[in-house]
Image (cartoon, rainbow, N blue to C red; front, side, top):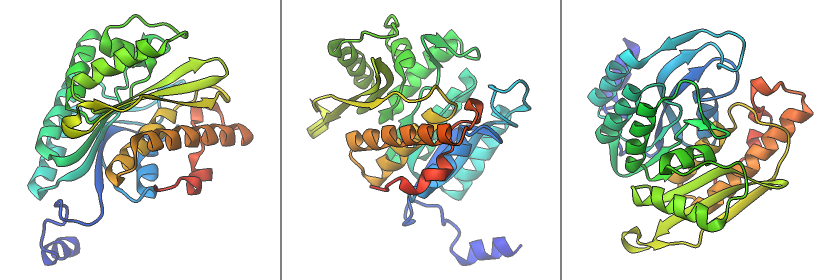
Length: 300
């Protein structure tokens, strides 16, 4: 009752776009252990000075990389959860999506974007579909088709190389990518809607590269010179690194940080997280111990 009185005294619609602090709605699952999804996005986005508002798609006791886990699909409860936000009149400066578990969830996200995004809202979609040339076991062709439709609503997308190939119907190869091939894929994706594309996880010898493509200028008709942003490979793959990366990109987008600068910052921070996790002998399934070095993440 106290909360209701405070709400009424404050004028009710404290979540409207007139609020000074920026807000991002993050649509992803919750994993209680293992450092991934919303468990990563919430602290990272918050540290960057943006309110993180989770929309859970499912609840896991721990992520699926462990031998066993509890799982609760939240799909049937998402519409009612979201409807209460509509009744509050909420609007968001950013909307960010992560792993989506079904074609229906992808459709719910499209409806969410239509219902909550304003003209200035930054839509950041991480099309979490697969890796190393293969789709995840939970993904199917219907979901691939729906994800192709979803990215048309995005301002920024962050596909890895596998996802980029699937979204552009390009044959996958592990290495040996030429600039013109990556440019063609990024251009194809951007032509569908996103002004900014970063293709992540490109192997280049001792480096891991990200390919940054951005349309700019009047009516977004001019393409800035695409950039390679590379870091030395360290350690091995860990859960949650993509969530750290995408969360920084999303927070920076609503904070007005230049896209290439944001990609460079996110890439460098992920590398530091991996190195710190190796130093502390953190198991790979436990993800990256970003908490130890979060203070090193700059807001601009």
